[in-house]
Length: 438
Image (cartoon, rainbow, N blue to C red; front, side, top):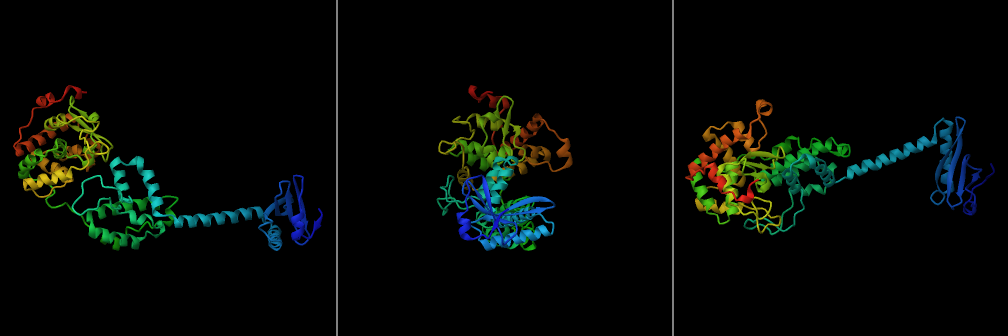
């Protein structure tokens, strides 16, 4: 093994046409320049460890100076003297550097990135409506409004309540940041603030258990006393439920609505206790006039089947069949009813009734059902509530006929209070056009 003192000129002129060649240094034991037929040149270190030759690449000659390469060769030689493998030490250093880079990347990850991963993972476990609610919480806004506007509202949608947090680093979302974000939102929209806070709390809990985000997540960000005190306590809206004596004026006003689809939708909401989007998403495939049932998408179970009562059957049978949606629209982009609220508000005003939200109609069904002494479990199953007791959860499997018996009683009682004659089931069935029979 011939040795020569390495200089910049000798290294520059050192080439080979063979596979590879070495130019060994006299100053630093084990140091050489390796040249390949392709023109690459690099400093290498070679020595013996436990009787076996080992070789480590120090780096390209264009990157490493001669003095730096000699210092590195001497350092590697000292490792050999201590029976340490320089290759293993190099891998450990590389792993440490990579770990530091990864730790920095995780510290710098934005909440928006983690939020997108959260929604993607939970997508298959959530209902369409639940996923849509989470997407709305984080939307950027600025899109043209597709639903009715309240007086003074902008023509474009506003950012979702979580949107301001998405551009911040996940590592910054601590109790102080949560409280600063929540306080103005709670003062402006208490109900939305409470709902969004619960979504954020669940998200941070998911992050804390995730291998990618767990080390930078403040798992207790939503648990401090200051944050809990900032979360608004939201109760039932005053008057957001129809009373027995209000049924007659409500039905009279709603049945006078010029749009028959909206009129039928509002009445069906009250008479089924369904959720707003569950009913709006009802398709004709889910309506069975023969066996008197409605199959709708369920927020909890994914799908549920409830009775098709006589008055509701008569309402649906009279609706136009423009497309797949039962409550269709000629103006909406997706062809289904989007905003029944405006007409409902006008009907309430015309009847001299206090405000009742669309969700309040669902609440009204559950409340008014007590007048016929309907079992709570029956009402909960029709409305799609989770079972609230052990017996309900594990030992009650009510057939549709049993639900129909009580559901028909509830509908008949409401119509009686409204002064509307309850249609016979056979008469309601005759109103169904031949093409609608399944």
